[in-house]
Image (cartoon, rainbow, N blue to C red; front, side, top):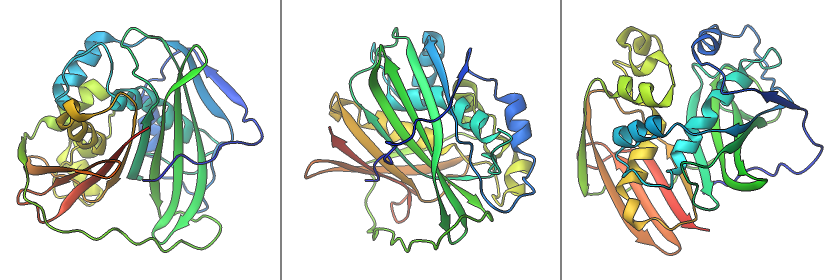
Length: 293
């Protein structure tokens, strides 16, 4: 499992926001391709203090993703709360990477302790880890949620900016081998799932809801958000998850809408391995490992 990068060093400049930034205009800007070919990141971090969670929105999110509504929130919900900061940060004039069109390749999050729905959160996001990839440049969006100065959640979202350049030589990373599995469950995904997840997550990327936009990015029809797939896999394990854990996922292949996907999980030394697959389990869409912390 990929861990969070080491962020110890010179403190970053901090930009405080009064509330969660709107995504409509930010995503419209993000859809405009950058003319620069060399990847550059903002050096500052964004933060929101005393962010109050919307319980009705949380309930709707839980229904769409398959979670049981509880006092403690799913860790993927906190990612949803930090996502507007991802878009806002990469939409900054100091950034040549645009989140729209970038590929979400992997995600790691750690729930340091249960987070309650009525707790106000301090949310922070910064970008780091710019490095070359054979198809472009990789960047990590590092998020943190605190309550009264205590870190309760942390996460790293890794994106691939295709066609961009970063200093250095790409690392040769071998993808773990795959053996077909027999799904323990199958989920039928409706054609409107992208719209329903958009309504609860706020992610307005049109490749999830619009066939024309999806085709423009190389997909035959809309694809479901990778973070829905991540959340749905966690929801399937709800009764088996410890109070404190780290979950790391690799997004292997997009899931087209509508469609049917499979799910398989097994216990291994130190944790749980779970996979979201195609209908018959012969190919993976998402691979996840969960470890107690």
